[in-house]
Image (cartoon, rainbow, N blue to C red; front, side):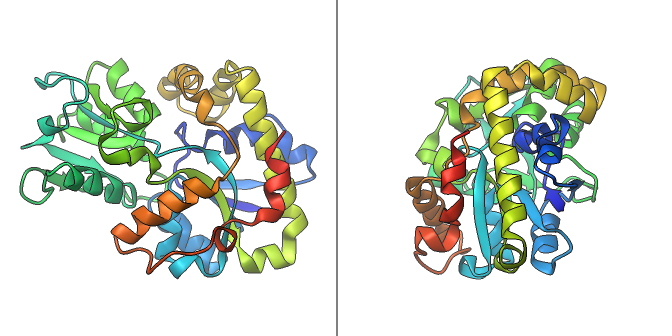
Length: 306
């Protein structure tokens, strides 16, 4: 089974790595290969059939290749809520939650997540094209780039004033003294309900489900078991990080996972899908409402309880 992940050195899709490292895929009889395909490369690969499943850090990205969700299905949530934080340089004169402090700055975000950043700013009256610059970092769309770590290093190097990325990237920037968290939408700094824009999930195609439904079921079981193990013992993240991450990121992942543990819930609720669809419509990715069961394969719902 070939699985693309949009970010590997990250907390967002961490249950996928945990399922692999803790042996849950193997226990289900699956031979899994996980490949980093950042930005929208993974979505394209799923559509083209060069991978079988996609660990999407933001499920609305599927709409770029599967208009109105046609031909795709979400099978299990990897983590709940919009997973990105807005980090700015440490010396910026700004208090936590003061989103207006971004005016005049040079920010970066990965392709896909940048849509959420732009909408967050627009909804509080900040025009990204007029009030600040959102730039693309050279090399950010490379095949083996984990964006949060990449952006944290760019902030430390003075290439940007801030970034919108996952909590591990934020932890790395803060830990090195280069940055500080300005907005964390899942923990209260939430202008305009940004925490409901999206969530991370495992997705596949209708065609693959028709051929390999049992294999997908096994993959879902493995992920749900990994989430349950992490909730029971977040310290396992240290072992997983040591096996999967560079040394600097591995040292930080356990602390990040402990803070994020409440978000590692496999359920995909109707409310979450409704809110995500509303956001997708607002950015032109979705033409209109789509029923819950046309987006989520409900046959896997029974597996969401470990």
